[in-house]
Structures are given as C-alpha cells and as structure tokens.
Length: 190
Image 1 (tube, rainbow, N blue to C red):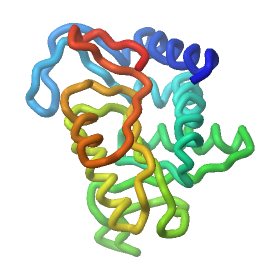
Image 2 (spheres, one colour; image 1 turned 180 degrees about the vertical axis):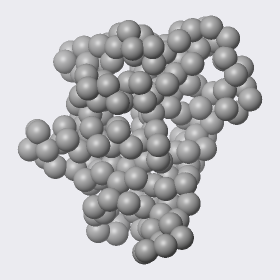
Image 3 (cartoon, rainbow, N blue to C red; image 1 turned 30 degrees about the horizontal axis):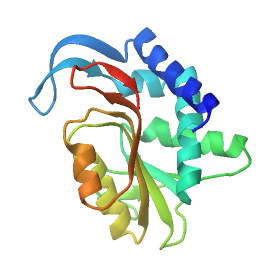
C-alpha cells in the first residue's frame, strides 16, 4: 500500500491505545480463552477520528478487491461499514453497506440482511472489528452467500491470530486486517 495508508494504520493503532480500545493485562474473553490484551473495537469505530481512519484505511482494500458492497455482523461491523460507506461517498465511489443480523427478524419482511443491497451475484466484502475464531465473520459470510452474493474479501480491524483468519483462508476466502496481534500479544500494524 502507500505511505499514506501506512500512516493511517499507524495512527489507528496509536488512537486505539489512546482511547483505551486496546488494554494490556490478564483478561478472560467471551470464548473463555485467556488473553494478555483486550480489544474493544467500538471504542475505536465509534470515535470520530477512529471511524474516519477505519473507513479510509479499509476503502482501498475494498476497491482493490473489486467488491460492490461491504457488510458484516451486527454489532461489531455496524459503525465500520457506515464509516466505509461515508468514506466511499466522500471519494466519489459510493459503496453501499449492509448489516447481517444474528437471526432473521420474526416480523415485517423477516430479513437477515439489512441495508441497500446490490444485485444478486455481486462480489461483496465482509468486515468485523476483530477476528478471533472467525465465528461472527462466518455467520455473515454464510448469510451473504445464502442471499446470492459472492465473497470477494473478508476483513477485520484486528486479527487476533487465534485461528479465525487461517480458517477463513482455508475455506478459500481472501483475508486482510489492519492490525495484527503477535505471539507476544503485542498489537502492531498488519
């Protein structure tokens, strides 16, 4: 990527540390696993500067992948896909965003996916704030494929490197992240 991209990702990491989105210590994750750090992506994606950086850092990856829309699992992806849609409009290349529900609505149209959807067969990207085991990302991938979309790219703000990104690649999807956790638990630009 470019020097500007590298600067944005480095600033994103600095901002995550400044805002407390990354904390080091001893934590138990929702999976029950132990970790030497905790990442709260919403402290980054709901921050004005963080949203700007996420949207503008992810957009070139999406453009290079040739996708026609970006979506992801609610709640982690909600502010990220909105930031990407806003950045795409600002740059004159509007890219619609969508959200994948945890389960289909039991009322109205009973939809699993919400947002301005592109035509079936379109290549789309799936994004989330973090990738650990890949469970949330796989849920969104499966929903998008069931709706008739092709997956052109899978993204995360942070790849925790705990098997999820490997599983995504093993299923044949391209995967990218802005930040990555090393074996030492330290987070750095990917």
